[in-house]
Length: 257
Image 1 (cartoon, rainbow, N blue to C red):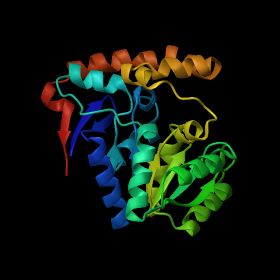
Image 2: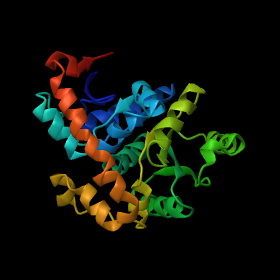
Image 3: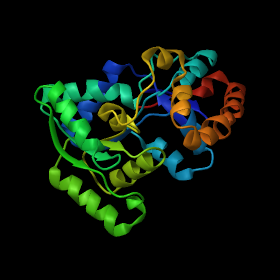
């Protein structure tokens, strides 16, 4: 599979249809695996977070989440085929799961959000089987007992696909950890997707997303939490991209099995 690197992490050359086929294959084979959705924030965080960097290196699929990655790939001379954010992927994936008889589990988001999203989605999608919803307490992944209980609860539901709505880098690091522990479910990081589906958080209009301004809409909705991230921390992407462009073109792309 062809990959393009943005600093420490990469994105795969996949269309939405390719992605659905690959996830279905992983779920049917029951060999485990997890899917990540890199964006500018992930690229910047990975510069200082070795656990996130390692998670990306071991991910089954890495899907470009955001127009900036497409723009950078185009300028670099190796354009990615399309943007595939976790939020855009959820509904098509659940439709495919329902068609193929694959079961789904929701992990994360605030209490009640996952249940509301599950009710909405099961009404929308005929034959969709959501076999469990769990909203573990904040910081559960740092407590050995609570994390073990969360994992055991998920395993007891025996889903084929698990959607992690925990946010980055928590969801990526936890999926990586559980894969190394032998989890055979396909795991996918979806960030705030359940918040959007449930109506708890309003997503940007489609035109803003298509223009690459979804971050600006989210900033306007929650400036106190996101201002530092978007306006200060993520500026580092400029330095990372300049370094990327100084890399010989043949080294920006990697081919793997």
